[in-house]
Image 1 (cartoon, rainbow, N blue to C red):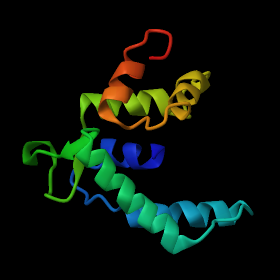
Image 2: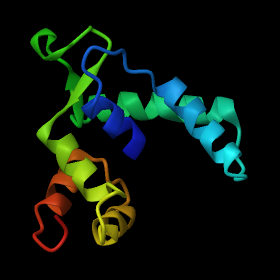
Image 3: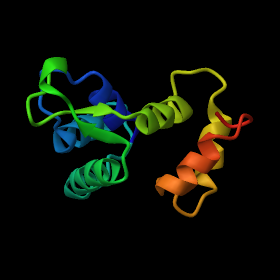
Image 4: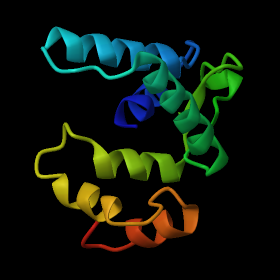
Length: 122
């Protein structure tokens, strides 16, 4: 999910390709000697996650004046908040991720907004 959100964030002028990102991820894992899992399953998960992020308001189509191609997205404020909460490049950012993991459906908009609004989490 983190990779998909970063790709959305940096995707001006480029088509969003979640299946390709899943393949790249699997190849990177294999190169490190880690099991990559079933590639077709990873690709389907990435496509399903794209649909979920769009449906639940974490991403939206990128406007043409911002490099939109009709096949790419931007983060909504909710999506930017999610990325900030799960971004592994931010030192000491484990707590928000753990709090989200404890939720039955952390990507439910009402649940996510409630959790993200807590100052001790955000």
